[in-house]
Length: 258
Image 1 (cartoon, one colour):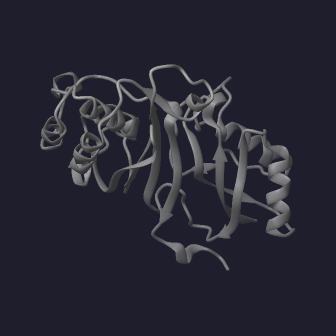
Image 2: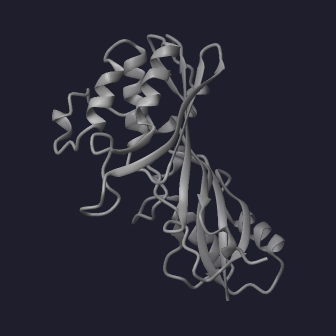
């Protein structure tokens, strides 16, 4: 019996999120089905975090204990042959038995993609948010820099556990223009609240469209907001389809078994 760290990629469009739900198609559910075919007898795989319905991933991390007597490369092929086309295991490796995908994580990196066009574009909109009017480059930059540092993000999401803290440390928050009308928001933090990145993105777009000032974001981060409707910020979330969990970094790389 060994513990395996699995790095997953998936197109979230046809999943009801990553976490297993009764009578719903989820990433965890499909992974557990594939593992069961290979002799897995666990109750639940552990994942680095939850992604919402429609959110994508290129670097979601899960772990599972499995009695496998063949090479890791054969396990990788066997898993991918059993998984649906919109999901894959990108890599796997044996890790220490104490490795935990969530609790051992030091940071997570998300990307959010958007483009500015007045007319619908069904192909691009599968993986990006179409916004109009167009966004202002300086507005995006001014909004993004407000998030850097340790703040109470209670106006930007819900805690991941009952009565859990809403304080998070953001180490990267920057916009990259990838084409004339395309933008990518890269944000990295020690952890995220539920729907935090989508809320951050929605408000930054509001700044970049001239609807609110960047200072309104700074003000909401300066104090704990007990009622989101009184935060002084407009309500709303960026669509899930533009969001991708890119990678999870770990503080205990020495736990990897060579």
